[in-house]
Amino acid sequence: QLQLVESGGDLVQPGGSLRLSCAASGIALDYYAIGWFRQAPGKEREGISCMSSSDSSKWYAESVKGRFTITRDNAKNIVYLQMNSLNPEDTADYYCAGTMTLYPVRSCSPNDYTFWGQGTQVVVSS
Image 1 (cartoon, one colour):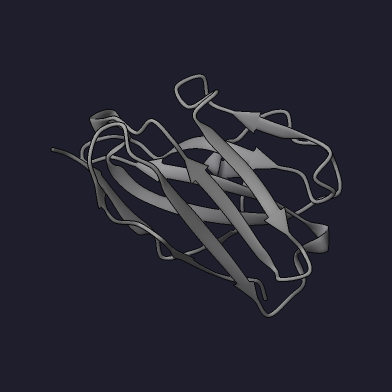
Image 2 (cartoon, helix red, strand yellow; image 1 turned 90 degrees about the vertical axis):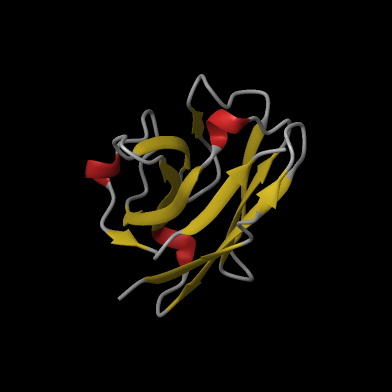
């Protein structure tokens, strides 16, 4: 069974950057699409970036396009989310999740993902 552990969350000032990591164990990531999701207090969990197992397709929410970048290192079994130009609206708990599929990603819905990490907190504040 795929197990995921997020790390890298922190308190950061507006305009700052963070890199989140999602370390997988139990199964190699080669056959899994991986997504990053976030949930702010009082809001529903939303998909912010997802990528296919082959790295051939990526999806970004409009709110993070041009600021966030998802990458994966299958050799290390880690997926990263580089977050730049952070603003207070990015404050949330961030989760990574995986689902076994070889298809390209064309969306990033939490309902499509099976295995979830425990989350890491990002706070953007001065």
